[in-house]
Structure formats: C-alpha cells, structure tokens
Amino acid sequence: MLKTQKPAVDPLDLCAVRTALSDEERLVQDSVAKFVDDEVLPIIGECFEHGRFPRELVPKLAALGVLGCSIEGYGCAGLNAISYGLICQELERGDSALRSFVSVQSSLCMFPIHAYGSEEQRRRWLPQMASGEIIACFGLTEPHGGSDPANMKTYARRKGGDWILNGSKTWITNGCIADLAVVWAQTDEGIRGFLVEKDFKGFATAPIKHKMSLRASITSSLFLDNVVVPEANVLPNVVGLKGPLSCLTQARYGICWGVIGAAQGCLAQALEYTTTRALFGKPLAATQAVQIRLADMARRIASSQLLALQLGRLKDAGHLSPIQVSLAKWNNTRAALDVARQARDLLGGAGITVEYVPIRHALNLESVVTYEGTETIHQLTVGRALTGFDAF
Image 1 (tube, rainbow, N blue to C red):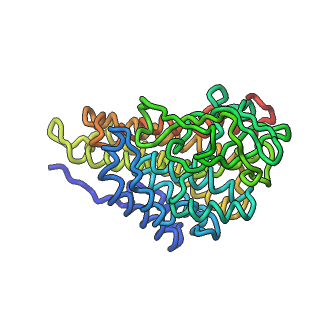
Image 2: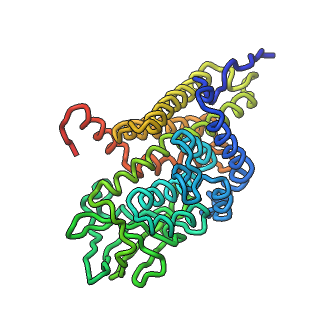
Image 3: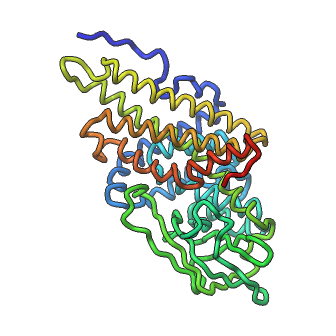
C-alpha cells in the first residue's frame, strides 16, 4: 500500500495568506464560508441546471451584512477592502452568480449612489439596498458597444425639470428583478447617471435566455422608451465616463478575489477525486502526471491570492490604481479558468456533470473572463501604462 504524507501546508493556501489577515477579516471570511457551505452549495447545482436564481438567499445575504459592506453608515457594515474581497472569494466558491449579484448591488449600484449621489438619494436608497428590500441593476453595456462605453447611444435630454431617456442596455445582471436601475446615458453635458425606478412609464426589461454560463444568475436587456426621470433621480456629482468606469473598478476589484474562490472549489474537488479514485493499482494522485497538474493549479491560486491581498492593502491605503486592478482581473480570472478546465479534465466523465463543481465553474468563468472588461481590454490597459501609447 502506498504511503501518504500529511500536507505540511493548506493545499488551497500555499503561501499562508490567511495568516496575514486580521482577526476581523478571518471572522468575516469564516462567516461567509459557513453560509456558502450551509446554504449555497446544497442547492446551487440544481439552480445552475435549471437556470434559476436563488432569490431566497437575498435576505440571508443581507442579514450577513455583505450588501454594500464597504460603505460607512446608511445601514452598511463599513468593512475594509480585504474583508470585501474575502466575501467575494467565498461567495464565488459557491457560484459566480452569487458573487455577481452582490457585486452589482454593492459596487455597481450602491457605490455610485454613495459616491456621486445627493444626501437625499443616499438616505432614500442605500438602507433599503443594504437590507435587500430593494434590488438594483447597472445599465451601461449596449448591444453594439461592449468594450467601448463612450460609444453609447442611450440619450437623455432635458424637458423642463425632468429628463427624457431613450435607448437600450444589454447583458444586465439582476435586470428583471431590479427595483432600481442605475442607467448611464449621453446628454448634452456629457455622460450622466440616472436612477430609473422599475415602475417608470416606458421602462421595460426582458430576460436573456438560453445561456450556457451564469445560469444561476438573471441576465436581462433594458429598454427605455421616452422614460421621464425627475431631476431628483439624477446623480448630481459626476459627469463623464469617470462615473461608470469608477464603478467598474470597484467591481473588478471584487472579481480579482472572487475567482480565487471558484479556483479553490475546483482544486479541492480535484484533490479529493484523484486521491480516492484508484486506477491500475494506485490512486490517480500518486502519479507524476496528476501531481504536476495539481501543483500547477495550486501555484496559480497562490499567486492570485498574493496579488489580491496586495491590491486590498493598496485599496485600504487609498493608493489602488485602475491599472493594477486590470492586471489582477486579467491574471486571476485567466488563472481560475485554467484551474477549472484542468479540474474538469482530471475528473474524467464525472467532470461534465453538475454533481461536481468544475464544469459549472468553468462555464461561469467563461463569462467572468469577458465581462467588466475582456481579457484583451485589460491587457491593452496594462500595455498603455507600460508604453504610453493607446492601442485601443
């Protein structure tokens, strides 16, 4: 019988990143990890298979304090950036759909209201968004625009004390269940942000069906046909692309952590499977070929963890650059996708069923590597920083 050695380190944390966390950060991680183990993992395979968003988890997410958790006041937890990253990591270990929901609610919708809204807007919307009573969506991407948000066609014009919005948005997470849409539109003054309520006349949503990725997430199109938006629903403190792009930087930071959780989930299952499945008289994990692949998966996760931790430190110190976020979003998402694909292959035929996590994570990560800046966009962002030339 082959002898086995007890691992000297945590296989999912080779560089002991957890030892660099504060007691509060570890408590946050452990609380969300327990929620994922108890509430998410038992149902998420079925949700993915049947294309169902587990909306019943929203009040529980709110009770955990994860919605808008980086905001001070207004019923929000006021956690630091590393804690938010750990929340994203544990949620995405469950499924990218859960992290996407929290990311949209927190970074793409609550953040701009807090950063660019009036005090009246903050008091009206943020407490109910933190409690999950109001769900929001972020309307930036358009059918023809994609990676070029400056090319948006949605337009808003003044009419007395109101604004009239016309246009459409697509690939919008939470769209069909949202009570509020943060819609970005061209105006004569530049790009502005509008808080469009679901019952505004002329505002409609439609689900995007037949997805093979993010199946446990709601993805929608938004339609605006002469929608009247009062001045009180316009974000007053930002004009131009800075508004939506700063929101994306917040969300991309969460992705840098989130995808690590997906990769950890895949590696954990690959380790369990290859150590217990015996072929030709010995466990799969006792072969050089499998060990090399497992080691490479752990290497990718470890380097991603260290990069995310440093980003968190920079963010908490107020020194984080969008370029650094692009680097980490590109690196960590690609690493996670590679890990998921390797894990799927190591599980053989079992790897293509939702009874195991790798195929679900692999399919989800095909979206994550594309949304909020494709891999190419982030590569070119880093390239521009290195050379000074804009190659977009």
